[in-house]
Length: 201
Image (cartoon, rainbow, N blue to C red):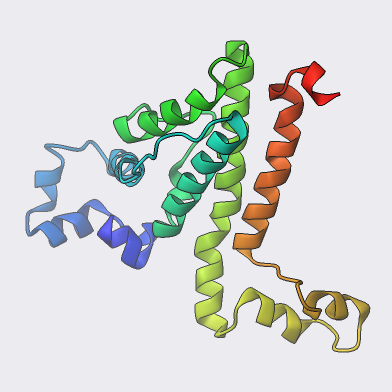
């Protein structure tokens, strides 16, 4: 994880880990079959870092906290979103704990197993899909010396109508605002599935 955090997944190899540990590369193959297993284990270790609070009441608040915990994990480890699969999940302890804690939000709502699974996967995939941009955005900011908002201002026509909207007070577009805004809209949409029809009238 230290190697991936410092230099990205491209720098992670069995040889790099062996060098950091001060052992022969072949020594690692007594414990790991290949780099793919290594990346699964560091992904699981990243999720195992999460400290879960007492779930707040209500499915919406619970799912919001679950999404924020996942988002914070991706911010600590920008390489992580590329290792998380929605359709081929890895059943390791840290990842399972996150899944079970999150799915508790749906208890008592009378949902069938397929709907529960799709609600969970939709939320996890939204957070992951947004977080995929964290690593590239950090690299772009390092390369250009500009935040995304500064970059937009520098690239758009100075006197155009779009720049006026982007630069007016209160207008802000970055990954944090996209994540927060999109999460609330996702939860709005899930309310159609998770809130009894009578309560929506």
